[in-house]
Length: 446
Image (cartoon, rainbow, N blue to C red; front, top):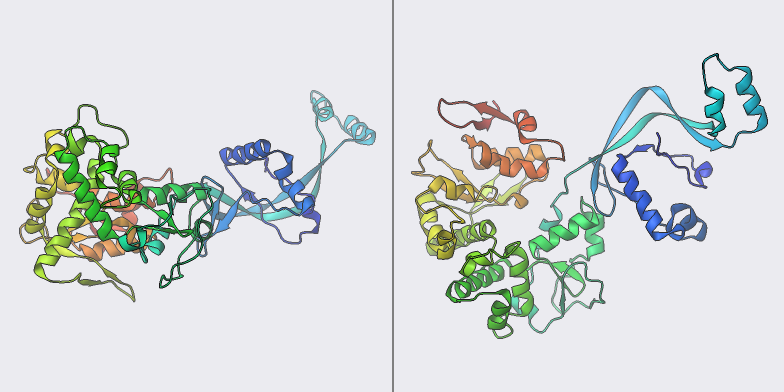
């Protein structure tokens, strides 16, 4: 209760909630008010009619609290005793005299009282809402994936990256679906803070097109990535500047290359690396090439993406292909420089290579260490449910057999709040199986 602060209009409020925040969050709010000055403090803002939002509450069944940078999960706590809400008042002479008359020998109450103010109880409550740090949900990505930007739309258009403060065009071209979202709309709809959402969108390669946040069409992204890899592998002194000069504007608008760099570029230049290995994030590229391999195999077979039925009314589309065909097609597409640099395991180390695809593909029908007759299912974690129990149900629908711990961990950990571990929660949803000289595996609860 140290951090309960009363605004000037509190007395006129008949309904209120007590919210307990961690000290770090409180300090961040204090720093924000100090940085922006008294003009933006809640009290001054209320007096002038300018409302300042420090925290935003979101969610339905699960309430979340967001500041500019972090997301918190709200939990109601009931107390058997009563919480007193008090207000400080300066002490008068009669208060000091009263303390002197009831002073206890050996107690320094009066000397301490001289340094403090008295507290007058103005209200009481039996419940408190606690806010604990929460992971940022990526559910908003599915909203903008529904209507991606094509190469035809990009040509001769003014493009921005999310968060750019410059003025943007807001007119929507003829024929474009009006069901698109601005960044502000996504902030209010998402289960994350503005900073977390911005980082998430940038990592996914989002752009601002006519004032709305959108993603490039998956086929355009795959095609451009493959073209960039081929160029880098054949270029003696590859750089992103050379890539842009080669492809722009004759082949792609420059924004396409910028998105490829933002999504698949290495966090830092690999010293001594050559070709694509020096400039690209290897695991992200391998996962993208896995999608390419599945698309190629489905196209060869002349079959569209099959439908996998989940329990209830939920239906989702997941491509599945034969494991052996997938592995050969996928490894053949991996840049030679990746293997030469030692950044990825050799083709012969099947288990180590496939571990790099945890979180995007699921192997169904594998027997022990063998993959004869197994299938590969394209199932990126961002496409699955954001509720942990529902996601676990989906995972066991896609692979009803036993899961390797690391394969299951890749789907579970992104949904865990800070401080929670995979081992702490997995036993609520899965059964553990132990085999001599074998790693732990997990299966569906009976």
